[in-house]
Amino acid sequence: MIALRYYATGTFQIVCGDDFYVTKATANRAVWAVTNALIQHLHNFIKFMPENECDETKNKLYRMAQFPGVLGAVRGTHIRIQRPAVDENAYINRKYYPSINV
Image: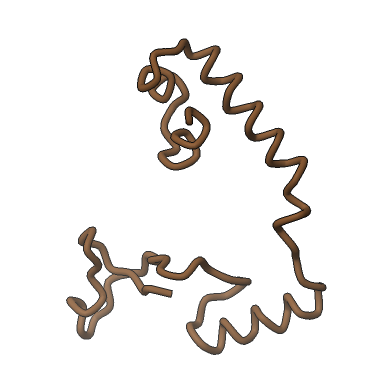
C-alpha cells in the first residue's frame, strides 16, 4: 500500500510512511521491493512496437494534434498548452489551466 500511495501521489516517502505509521526507511524499502518486483515482470505487460511503427505513429499523432515526438497518451490525459488567443475558455479544464484532452 505504501508503494501504491507513493506511485499515485509522487509525494516523499516520509509522507507515505507517516500515512501508514512506519519510518522513512521502512517506506523506502517497501517502495524499492515493489518497484523491483514490477521491473522483473514488466516485459509481460509492456510491449513496444518496432521502430518503423513508432515513427509512423508519431507522424500520425503529429498530423492529428501537432504534438511533435509523441508516441501515445493515456486516454483522458490533459496536456497543458499555452493559452490560445481565440476561444480561450473552451480550453480551460476542471483544474483551471488550458489543456487539450487526448
